[in-house]
Length: 355
Image (tube, rainbow, N blue to C red; front, side, top):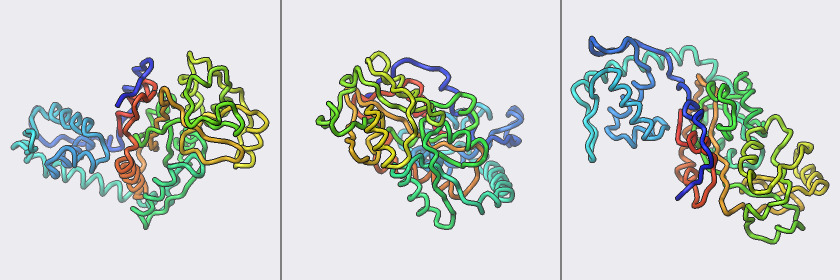
């Protein structure tokens, strides 16, 4: 499988930011050890020590195996000792690894107790989850999370764009959202966590009598000369307009000027009939009267979607939401890009990361 990544952007290298376990605690080993160790590294170490398997430990922590291995290597560097003996068949703690286990457990138990003591009000309130718009796939993730945490209350919200939702996340009026993380400003990304969830294939919504409506799929270059609506002028969806701009660049496709934001099928149909601009969407976009939805091909443009949250969030419903996203992504292959997929370079880097 292949994904073309036009251009590059080194700013993505710092997009992941620090994880929620960023409190610093005294290091337990060695006179030459550093004065402080990140509890996140201890959590990674303990998962491997208990699972004796990097793949299972990574799944338990909802992180990529590559990221887990990197954290273990960092902990070994900071402690100045090897913690595991790795072979192709097994992972075994070294003497120092076994010595670290009880210290790591005590540190993490204390941290969990601290979070539980001060996080009780958080657990009692509903978790507010933005699923963008009704009818999209994110409602399935929310539904799975409710099954996983039946005693927690998870409430749906509809912000219609990650740029707008990010402001609500940072203000504490929203807990989690879904969208294109790379489309946010670096300063905003630094205050948020993210977990890659899905590569969404992009599509175009056409009036049912449009010249391309009879096609089963629409080659991207066949939109040359068209003005395609991609949320221009909507301050809540800047990340989507930016993705469209990169996709259309050099292809003779224009971004349609701002139009009133349509809410509901009737308004969408009325605006579509009046403006008649194709609308950039995703293949799971709900059916709208008087229109047809056609996947884009040659190449297959992808909308990268992450679960995004405010750093420091502690809530049992949030743990279930992350697990639900991980399970569905694995079951349905959401993170397997298609052949001839198109994705900006910054997005490709960010989709390889996980907080």
